Image (cartoon, rainbow, N blue to C red; front, side, top):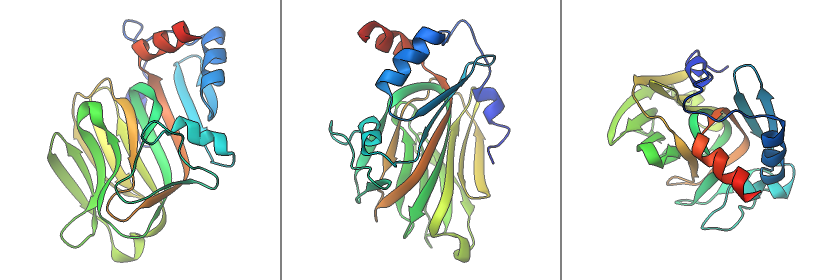
Length: 211
């Protein structure tokens, strides 16, 4: 379940966001392979990926080439896939196959913020912002396997979570920018990924011009 932090991500600010109308939705659906839905009242956009079609890998390029996403987005150690959408505020929820803790998993490079799975005993989820990090310790029996990871950047706060274990921090990180997915030190597999939030206004204008 997404936290209350998402309420700030869904707030509408007419001065900083372009309205997503029917024409813009048409543009987005032509350019984005994920399933797109819009809350027209709040302008909250959702983009969901189940990786049942290989073309969804087009939205997660690795070194400029579409990711292999036949049965999930599988990243080798140290691999980085960048999602094509630039966000103002965003909440990411990813069903992630975890074999061992170690390294960054989800990152917003524009704001130097990330979710890491690390710790001296490979036992914690960390929220790192500009090289300062805070952990939440996870019991050994709940660390690995298919787990839900969440990473959120709202108007005035951020969150990193592994299942029910989470870290939140007040921070001004808007716009979030594009979100990266990392293989970390041991590789990672993403079965589903869902984005919820508001796209960056400048990015919306750019893709609209390109259409």
